[in-house]
Amino acid sequence: MLVKTYGSAVFGVDALTITIEVCIGGGNKYHIVGLPDNTIRESLRRIESAIQSAGLKMPRQKIVINLAPADIRKEGSAYDLPIAIAILAASGQIEVADTAQYFIMGELSLDGGLQPIRGALPIAIQAHAAGFKGFILPKDNSREAAIVTELLVYGMNNLMEVVAFFKHVEDKPAPTLLDTTTGVLPLPEGFEYDFSEVKGQENIKRALEIAAAGGHNLILIGPPGAGKTMLAKRLPSILPPLSIPEALETTKIHSVAGKLNALDALLTSRPYRCPHHTISDVALVGGGANPQPGEISLAHNGVLFLDELPEFKRSVLEVMRQPLEDRNITISRAKLSVSYPASFMLIASMNPCPCGFYNHPSKECTCGSGLVQKYLSKISGPLLDRIDLHVEVTPVNFKELTSSAEAEKSEEIRGRVIAARTIQGIRFHGRPDLHCNAQMNAALVRQVCQIDKKGQALIKKAMERLGLSARAYDRILKVARTIADLAGTEDIRSEHLAEAINYRSLDRDSWAS
Image 1 (cartoon, rainbow, N blue to C red):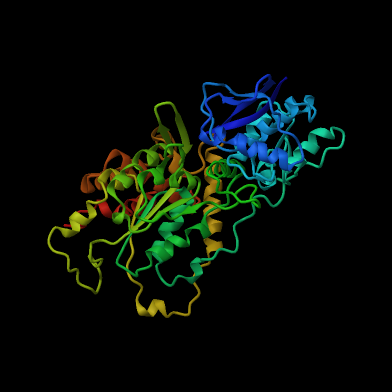
Image 2: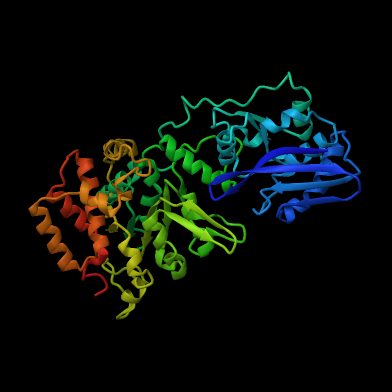
């Protein structure tokens, strides 16, 4: 008897419908075809034990299992459950008619328990798009899949519950429901770090506010102990909340990477990733034998913080150049090519020289001639060109450090950031791919960031003096546009341009001269 059940394969952050065909006939061997990997080939041992643990019978006949389309490679243990249900249906132990209406995915334990799977959200989206009635999956993934409210999502604990679901057609359990109208995307609150704890450093707070308001990349340069890492850790507390489209994109990536827990539905706060400087290029941008999202994709719609930037291998930093520009990463293999979104804010920190005290107001730099330039050259010019704001961090003096004056709270700064993002949301209405000023392309920059003759003269002088590239010109205009949004002005004024130009520290001749 031939029976079909349906599951899905995830490629990148999207899913594809997979048909599991099971035919039971004369003979006594089991066969799995359709380009399965070793995990799927081993699944029959798990399935046999799970079926027996559930008090059912594994057929002692020839079983042929086909995963269609047969020309696409299938990977992972999530096909255990649909194969088991197809075998039970083909052997007459459960009803056949109802199985074709549901996506079924889940890894089986030897005792019949269901283990969580990766990519439940993109699979649920595909199930709805393909017109299926519902989705049966492990309980731990049910809230994640229930984001797709038009789909009936049933979270199950073990194989027996799934069998009972199909045996009792008229008495189905209640599907998992998720209220997406309230409480899904609350305003961020209760952050561990707050800007009110920072003494002094008003210019750095201003730069971080601009970066948060426009989604700009930023690098902090300063001596050890000046507060670079401390300031970067507080950036999430002033970022605006995720919109629903942003939250869906971000959740899909974390779902594919297996980073969501059973209590997660939508991610409600922006990601903040801080990899160690020993990270490999594959771990940073994604890839591997079975391609998985890297840190730049896990930071999508959030922040990627690289502490001590020159300590990262140069090859690791160079692979970020294309994603920083295109805001996605394509991983190509001989038989497979997948794309992951990678629209993130890059926040980096570094010392100005090996000893850390170049340009220090009170300590003398002990680095020999040329060492500062050699140290800075670990970071290529093309990469620095893609960083919008270069900010010098100087140590806080004793008077500021011991001051009892209250600093501005993150909540107040976040209010201004949200107001600026609201302006940008209106500006980019009808463009779902654009969420902030930093994501504008060159054509849109010319349209949105128009400047008067006084501003043109100012930026022309800056470009000639600093030797800025065309990319740096566009990025200065984007930053100036964000500064104008924070000020609530429609036009970019010369003072906005002057402030944006001032954030190109590493383009100045005084550095490493």
